[in-house]
Image (cartoon, rainbow, N blue to C red; front, top):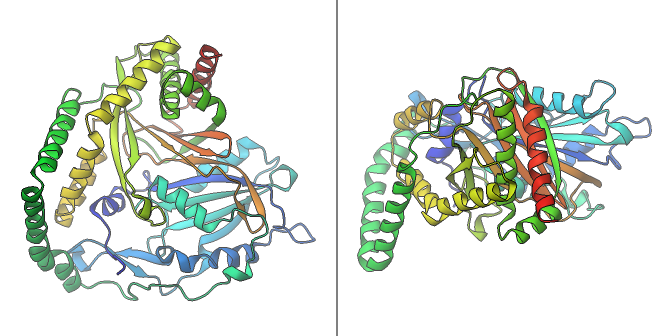
Length: 469
């Protein structure tokens, strides 16, 4: 049976959204453009739309919209868009000449600051023509209510091919599978769905939990100890230190990409007895050290980084939705030696894992499933004004094999992670083939010195490479 309701977290992303805080995740991929142009050199947009439409039967959520019951009396549910039109979601634009990277990233920033239309499915693909050599960029926007970072990679794997000459006829458009509902829910539906039904469902859930605890007391005691450990680890650093990184943001953005070798990062991580994520966090720490130093700002002892981690099980990797927990990792700003900085970030990340912060986040989200909708909205208001973290740093492993869209090969891809109201910069990391792409998404007015952060991250990677030879 298809679950048609949004989780509290997914509904929260809808509440979080505003004109200055679009809540879609995204990416920009660059393709070689092979087979995408006709003899006159024009983009075959109609063929690309048909090709993408042929994949949608396997992804019914991409034809659906979230709808609240009247008066928002319950949690929103996914319903079919009766006016779905692939042309509304797949479009093309021309870059301003000369079509270099600066023009590309400016266009990506402008596109990503456009809100997705709530009256239609919450996603869009924009092809950007005008890159040298016939290459074409594809800007993807997927609302966070629809998908998390890992889910976005999985969705890309479903939309694209692992061979250059996949048969588009095999994927011809057809009627979408598993329609949910053709009409928006009524107020009665909302009351029944999240009101009266919850009077039955929630006591049963509590009863099952108590029964499970009684049947498995050792596991229950272990879980309780883990949650207590997580609470204690977070309580030692309840608030993030004040920083110029945390001010109210405006409606303009700037986007930069730092590219690194994934095999080099793996070799460095192995030599230092850590992980690629440790290498990333150490380099990002170096970047923020450089940024704050350039502002003449005395560095606090640490910055609090929100680090999302996937809690998807193997059988959930082809499903959309959000299955994510979070760690709070302090980045040591006063440790400047590259080796010591790596050790400190490695230990900080390991501390968050060892103290089961991900389990705490999961428990909080599960508890939030029993909240009434006004409480979810109120919590979203508080999130926009939080003082717990300074920055978001997310690292998503991408596909290690070449991907193709209608015969054209994806050459590279970089991520974009949205900002909340008082986070002026986010750091997204995505691997593809042998490349790590670090996407820096920032408020253009509050972070005019974003290139300093990019250069500092580059220097952080270089220092670790030099340290390990």
